[in-house]
Image 1 (cartoon, rainbow, N blue to C red):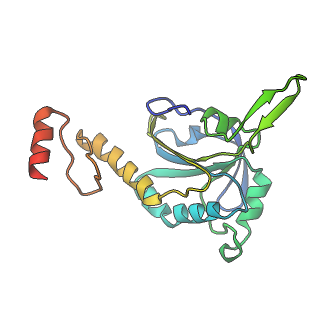
Image 2 (image 1 turned 45 degrees about the horizontal axis):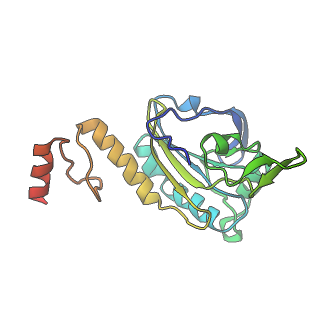
Image 3 (image 1 turned 120 degrees about the vertical axis):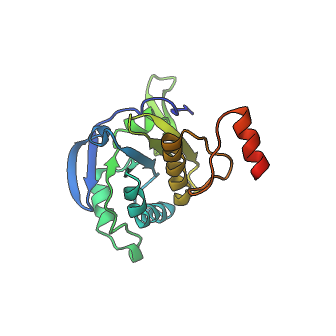
Amino acid sequence: MAVLVGKKAPEFKAQAVVNGGEFVDNFSLEQYKGKYVVMFFYPKDFTFVCPTELHAFQARFQDFKERGVELVAVSTDTEQSHWGWLQLPKNQGGIQGITYPLVADTNKTISYNYDVLVGDFFYDDNNMLQAEGELIAYRALFLIDKEGVVRHQLVNDLPLGRNVDEALRMVDALQFFEENGEVCPANWSKGSEGMSATHAGVASYLASN
């Protein structure tokens, strides 16, 4: 699994569905230049854990917006599948009401370049192309800063849903560091003290906590 933290987020262009039902060609992260982005991958449309995550991010949509953060979701489903799922009410297992973009990684290249693709391609003894695994995305999340650099990444196995509060906490931590020049110790949360990244700063923090 590649570690992308500290590196430029891989670029891409793909089909997407935005605003709950509008098809967009050549969607890319370029439009968010100068903004923070939380981009998260999920395995499949019309499944069980995935809608709980997508609705959980939507429920905190305004909290991300207030922090200047754009949300983007990605799976290997088609844009038509995304659109169909968006038309289905929540009480029927759908994601109606989701307003942030859903990117269609139908050729698997986005998931591959972010190194979150389950399975891989290989050639067998007869030189025939084969696939190992489902070729869908893990539950991965990337926090990308205003310069397009990945500052945090998280990758969960398929059965393990994510914590949206933790994603917000990481945004808060990054912005606190950028604004104050202080680092964030264990279990830091918004409103807590940071500490100076010096021996004296660490000693002072530990003494007061």
